[in-house]
Image (tube, rainbow over all chains, first blue to last red; front, side, top):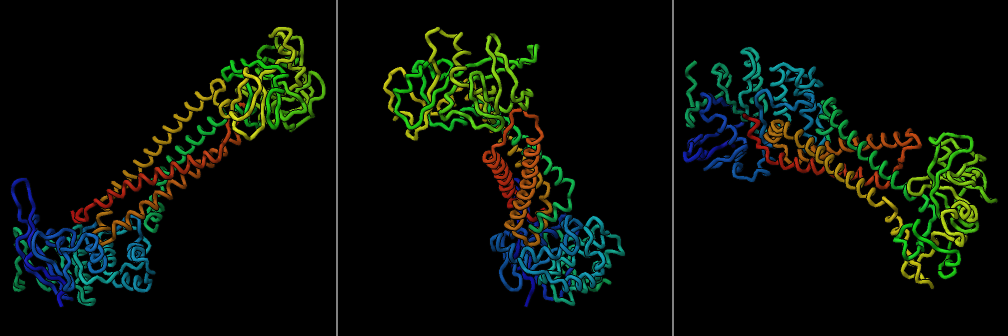
Length: 227
Length: 362
């Protein structure tokens, strides 16, 4: 089974009379337990690639499959449902809700689903990520690294099959960044997620199973021989 | 509810300020409503006190009580369940003990038959038994310090009146009413009139459930009007009610817009956060509900506090201020504010739906 599969996906934008091809025809797939890094200069189409997989925008042509089921051509409402169930987003520093404590960020998932929160699971997750003692703190009281770990906890909590991380280490120093990526790699393996991380930081690719380079809307796999 | 409440708790200062604005707006609107209502009441309190259905006036009177001239015998020409005659006179009185014209009081004197239904309920003192005795509106005691047994001299007349009792809510065209026997009234008013008009009165008040036009009168010089029509034609009453009504109406409209815009701006500010939630797959529906719940909490708290303040203010206002809460009307005003605030929230829902989850990435 493939967690993510892109078949002949491309994305074009109209800019005045010109048509810009942000993502040229791409085929891609990732399996459970696979940690993929996408690197490339800014404006190369990395974010477009990630947001199409996440269903935040639709491809011009082609189709994205999540868990072998067609996803990208669903209505926004349906996509939101699938996104909620199957995809965990980890975004740059801003993606925690400022007025919820770390614990409440996770509990929100249950509130939306109208289910009871699993306190044991929350404690366990927070312990794994080393932020249990921060459970009742608000995002403003956390350091950048702690915030990202909280975001990872939140993304993992509702057990998605896919984790999409957009520059998760952008605001962190090297040491913190490596720590966060190690956690991501560990959780990917242990919980069999397919994780795609967009980054511009070459050093982080050491912890990934495969590395793709995006350039001018073209995605190419890079052989892991360079190291 | 979860998000709505958590955010209010987290941003206490911001939300207290918003609630504060709603409180002030609700307070302003309801206080003005109370004032308008009080003033309107002071025009017609004495009329409400009659608990009557219709009033007979001279045809030529153009619905003005002062211009209507009837005689006591006219009452016999009317076929109605209960009839009561009324003579009315506007006068200036002053406590016997005072020499200063600053103590002059404008009053309306009601001359009535003490065995008919216009006799007011006495809240203090005793009923009128003799010529020259009056029952006075309680406001004379509260505002002017007049007590039972006090003698009032009538300006420009030889006669004087003795206060023997008080009744409440007896104001007519904003001046307090003195109830006297018809004889006393004739004495006071006769100097203004020809000598042969000893049995002159101004109106005959009817209690009869039939509509005014169905009441038979065997006298073409008389006309029956409903009490509502009569009240609406009290001097200045209609103009006052309309003016205040419009003022309050516009105030509610503006207040509603202000609250609505507040909620809208608040939602706009949260656009990026809403984008993040949408990227996580939280439905617009859920986010919208929480914004509406939040608005409801804010507006309800604000309106209730404003309402409480209004009632408190009413308790501490001096008696001279014409202020009266009409709770049904107040409740309607409050409900109106709530509804408009919610409309503001519903308007914000459009913004929420339109937020592109892509903003979360940018």
